[in-house]
Amino acid sequence: MEVITVLIPYVLRGLDVTLKVTVVALGFGLFFGTLLALMRVYGGKMLSNTVMLYISAIRALPHILLLLVIYFMIARIVDLSPFWAGSLSLSIISSAYQAEIIRGAILSVPPGQMVAARSIGMTRLQSIRYVVIPQAIRHVICPWSNEAAIVIKDSSLVYVLGVPEILRQAQYYSGRNPTKPFNAYLAVAVIYFLLTFLTTRGLDALEKRIRIPA
Amino acid sequence: MAPKQNIILRIEDLHKKYGREEVLKGVSLEVKEGEVVILVGPSGTGKSTLLRCINQLTVPDAGSVWVQGVELTDPETNIDHARQHIGMVFQSFNLFNHLTALDNVMLGLMHVLEMDKDDAQDKAMMELERVGLANKYMNYPGQLSGGQQQRVAIARSLAMEPVVMLFDEPTSALDPELIGEVLVVMKDLAVGGMTMLCVTHEIGFARDVSNRIVFMEHGVIVEEGSPEKILNNPDLPRTRQFLGKISDLH
Image 1 (tube, each protein chain N blue to C red):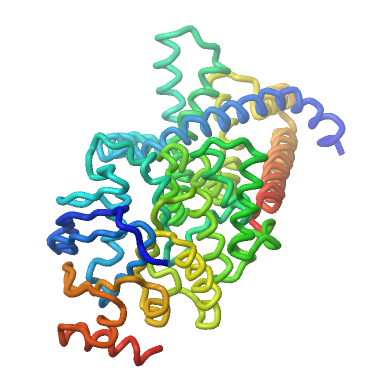
Image 2: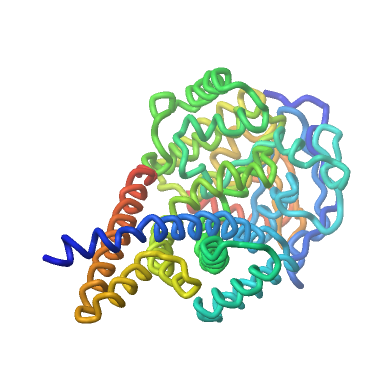
């Protein structure tokens, strides 16, 4: 009972931070991930290989390590709050994963679609914009919801930079109430579960809504 | 309809290699306005490659292609612009899967010809009517039979008002009972005076509507002539042998 009446309201103080970090990480991650994916698929050999190397490097390292490295790099160059440093770091990490998800979705569009678009005189850019991307979006939602679930939970990593998101709040609580360390974390677990569950349900619904009738 | 004298399509000494394999070994061909030319030959002899080299979907290694006096193989030519006037129909239809029949036909009108939406819609409906599918305008490709999809694909090409239509085995992927409806549409086009270059094994269609049959093998044109001559009395035994085989099938 204490979990619901006391702890969840307490921990919820960090919820807006968790949500902001997640939205920034996923949003910027989607934007940069899309750019990286387009460079990977349509960018020619040089660009494609460069991007591949960059993606491989990011995917090869633990997120927490990247977060710390990027935070101390960025923080030295420009004056960024821990919130922005953490969120942007997460978005850089996520963009690498999203790039591969989006690349896969683009490649799953049959090549004949591009050929047909070019054959009626559409430019390459128009073909990508009006024929390939709208179909790739349908293929992207399912794997993307997986990435969204991961980023929601990865938002907790910014606590190492001192950003007061829900896990940090739970720690404060536990620090002040050392007799019940478990309950605060249980409350956090419930919130993460709900966030992830609602997000993936929502994306599932979206996927069904825009499914191509057949 | 008897072809006129002006040349719509001119292909000169076209070469194309895939890796080490030379698929086209110097092909030259002219198609006059209103002419219907059928390309036949065993698979892997470069018929499809030849079609794709015409509108530069595949870039030839050497040789040149002119459509209405514009050289498409010239790097200075705006190829996107040139392709508007060259219709192409594919074996696998390649309708845009995420769009309705109507939107499939409208897409090029709006984004290539830059028509406004209402005009594009009217024009697209007219083209769907022409292929007998006005009642299916709201259907997605997945809700259409193969024959219907191919007819929408033809409408999509026709909407761009092409000066020549290229058909790449338009009926090869269809169930036998759906082939007829596509051939009827193609026949109407031919009778209406459309300039057509078709890769097909439909000998009946070739006999009825074509002006010329071109037999290709191993990357070169082996023999060409009127349908009567090529189908009944070809010069080369190889042409006779090949056409004999596909006639048996039909």
